[in-house]
Image (cartoon, rainbow, N blue to C red):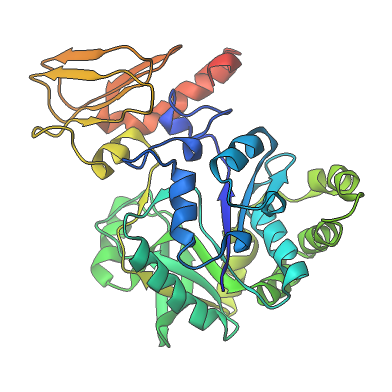
Length: 362
């Protein structure tokens, strides 16, 4: 039985103004159904885990919404971070809590804001990773590239091992020439940030590479069900190193030959911006317009307009005439209009708002 951990953090600034600090993208219904990205992720891991084996790591600002969206997940399994300390602290805390309950458990970590339409193919891939994790490898799941993408990190495959491969190296986001070379070579996968391991093996690697972080999360986990937990969190959590799980553990472990990888034979999307959302969701008409309509939103009337991504989230009608390839996001207090090919730049608007001290809009 897999212990499935879902890190649910980040504010999704490239999906502003729909995604906000107090209601980030993983809480939003961006799956083409009424389910939020978080609910879709938990439903997917439920093919491998019982509800009492599912854990969510989230910030204090989102804990109530997470609990409301996931009534089947026990309250003690919602691990609340007092402040964001990046993925190493979040995932390590979950591993330590699980280890207190089941010292040799197999754990998987899967981000709350990814979209995987084929849950059964996902589950079969995770089962292959679990098989290799039982042998003592830290496992990651790589995605077969659909093209040379400079926005993705890559995994370089080594020798075959069982149903997967030894991981030779994590590779940083490349330039365009390198990305083409990686995809052409055939021995690179996208790094999707999915991990599977035995908690005792992972915590051993954490102790080896980040001993201070290891000692802190083990101390917090031992006090999890005690009255002293809050005081310990106040004392220890602000001291934790702010670092990703890749840099803290996975990259040095891979260099030592302790990491494996299985290819993910399923459709996978990191729903990071509106252009990607437009590629992932089913078009509302024959000319490629995608309309994202959260509950209680308005509607869209698109006349002689093609390939637009429209989010009528204000309750008003959004109407267009003769415009193509735009992003239009209408919320009660902000309206975004930009070309689809500049979707990545939306993040910069949030930084400008912060600099202008318009925190009410972020």
